[in-house]
Image 1 (cartoon, rainbow, N blue to C red):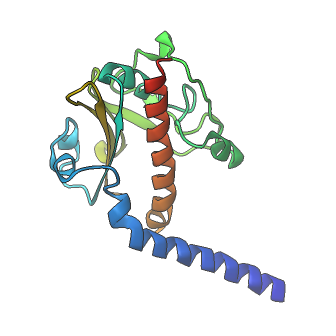
Image 2 (tube, rainbow, N blue to C red):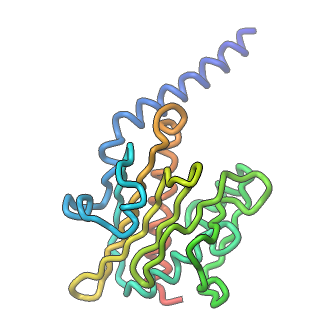
Image 3 (cartoon, rainbow, N blue to C red):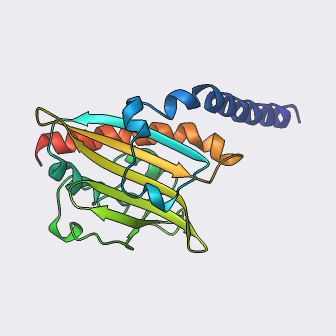
Length: 206
């Protein structure tokens, strides 16, 4: 019985720690790597969810053209190039994930309305839907509820003087509170890895 109570205490402690981490670090996580100007700028697709309950912006500078980066972004998906994050961790929790670090012509035909799978196996969260595409500029994935967008995941490519590109990942969502707050630090870590992997692949010239 003591072991049971100890185990329950550990679980509760972990949950409390995650909640406190989310509360304390959210302001930093929600703007990591972006400028005030980037956070305030309107991006294509923003009009699909005009008053989100939460807006998150994260960014990274990539020494590559928008076209090279765009080619990797549209291959995102568990059954394509993967999610560019911690593949070993995703597979460990039963989320089967591909890891193809090569541009495939057959995956360059993404269209509005196509699905982007988060897991390739039977155990999977709902796939994202392609909400908007602006070639070599913007990719917007999203979730709908009863025909209305409730979450958007935007990848915007902003060319810079000197040949580099700013990749801005903007999440706008109405899914907040409860478990979403516990998941937030985890999704932050996974997305940071995703952005760095896209940078490395784009700069490698594969």
